[in-house]
Amino acid sequence: MIRELFSCVLDQAKAKGLLSSERFWVYGTLIRARASHKSFVPKDGAPPPCSGSRGNPEVYFEGQKRTKDTHRSKTDPDAKLATKSAKAGTIPAYMGHVLTENRNGPVVDTRLTQANGTTEREAAIEMLAQLPGEACKTVAADKAYDGEAFVEDCRAIKVRPHVAQNISGRSSRIDQRTTRHPGYKISQFARKLIETVFGAAKLQGILPQVKLRGLAKVELLFTLAATVVNL
Image 1 (cartoon, rainbow, N blue to C red):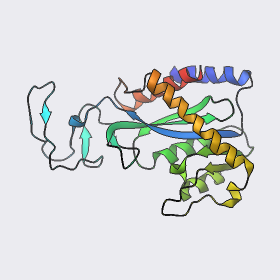
Image 2: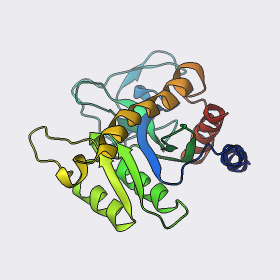
Image 3: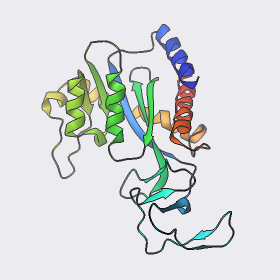
Image 4: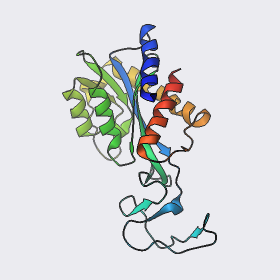
């Protein structure tokens, strides 16, 4: 039902001429899960020692390295420990993805995945591949998408990747064939506006920390948030 509501709102935008069929943005963000750090226990072996009340125990992780490969949350097994940067701490989270039309701003597709390292690019290609029409399209994205696989996959489905260049200790997969065009600079300016979608949903909406557990339920909540932003 939530997906149907999302589609109905998009139909209204299309009827008013607010949807472009050629220019898009893509972006991913961490969605804090309804789980705590202390709920993460080893997948194999004994849980860490704890004390205090059963409802809110003190759990001792000192000397233990916790990763998404070795630990799982007891309260929400679908959530993963993740971080968006090396300077930020990890949080129990999912990864939310949106594809947005870049002239008027409505979200045209959403995905929610577990917070793994490659899901941003994989979800983006999946959403782009399902766009209707045979005409060549462009997609703006930040430097996290500047990878050989993503750039090649975009071109394979007739999408021009207007991706921000990542030149931190490496060479970018985006060269002057793309950056010399005025449309690339416009896309780079416009793509920053996509962050307002998550800003509205997190600061004023229902996504600061989700109240549901499990990938399927949180995905519906994420799509509902995108629907509200579109309205």
